Length: 388
Length: 220
Ligand SMILES: Nc1ncnc2c1ncn2[C@@H]1O[C@H](COP(=O)(O)OP(=O)(O)O)[C@@H](O)[C@H]1O
Ligand SMILES: [Mg+2]
Image (tube, rainbow over the protein chains, first blue to last red):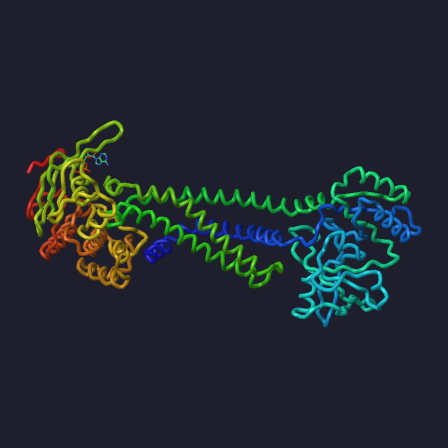
């Protein structure tokens, strides 16, 4: 029977070519959208790697002030740490969690060069953000004495740089002047939120007299409220006349950040939803028309021994064969993505997206063909063959 | 072979009721060639559809091969149509998108037979109607007479005992019509039981027996 259906569709490929193209286009769009969704979903399912619920971001900006910035910043963080409401505080570069800022660079080991995010912080960051260590320890002030700058890297950075070896205590080079010693390895640090993919990153200890990195992350005790925030802002403004002082909650910036990912996905989803509905309606119309035109054939098949369910499955089978033609063409395009490693995404993402798109297409065509096929089966053979 | 007792058929549409067949009693013996005649609209096709199990009678009983058709379930009827009956229609009802041989194979798709077996039986049937040199053609490339010969091959491919033909020569000129009748007569001498609806008195005369219908009633 399958062969028969293949022949039937193949011989009619001319009349079906538009349908085939339509289903093919639907598949390609679905493949794109699903790739996006699978990519984001997979990221989403990976832990973010740190705690941010109670954490505030105090942004200080020196504005016109150019004198003694380093000591002023040091006094500021000491003051912050002295409040009873504060559990821990850490200075950090402007690429704080969920911010729009990014600082990128690369390091080299044995000619392997890996790029990633560079976070400049003091050793307290682990306490503020509760970043668990996999190996080694966080750097401390005492680590500065060596000739290498201490850094902590994440797991992905380790596996990219060292493959199966351990990266602990290895020395890596940033440039001719600077070499790093890896003192610790953390698991994940998805600073841009759950939707960020787990990419290489490293933490480098802040210079003692650093003047540029003026963000302070503050872990507050549970129950700390806006009263303390007001007091903090006021105290800072008094301590640092002329400076800009701003406090943001990481909780809130996380929402904003994740919306930036979700909104385009949502828009894509809606647009492709419309598109698929259109394709489905078109398909439904064409199939309905087709069956009206093929009444004689239906009656004939019934007279030759086809059962009602036989007719239903013939029409469903035809649409599956047709969809299969479209999908074969679609697959030729789609498999290029994992094969040629387009966009540098994980192969698995493309493969899952392809399988899901194939499944959705079959489901859609089945739904569209279901009602017309049932109707076809309900046509009475004697009526279908009625000679005019 | 086929026995109809007190068969009645009423068509009901929303506004009108048509009594298409009224108290029909027919007994077709095995190996007989019976023709049905009557004016247009008198119920010939309706009768053939009921004999062919394409339609259920409103009243009365049908026996095929001595056993009454009681269970009008879809599956049971489909099986009977497939095994016992072969149909031929005035307008051929070939599927234009399939080649001649694929058209002939259709009845075999609805039973368990291998692709090879189907091909062999279809070739054999096409030889019987003298079209073995047209197997790869499509219906559009054939003349009316050739189309009807394909339809006959399709009707006999499953080796049914009964062949039902509804005005098989109605769309053909008389030379082609006679050719078709010749093939049917040959099938009949080879053992097939045939019931044929016709308009043509001369053709009806060449069959074993004639049943006349008038306004849904049997008149002879
Ligand atoms: N499906 C149907 N619904 C309603 N009336 C029908 C149907 N089929 C046939 N008839 C009516 O039944 C009568 C017999 O029709 P038919 O058997 O086709 O006649 P014939 O084949 O002798 O020309 C006609 O009056 C026709 O209008
Ligand atoms: Mg008729």
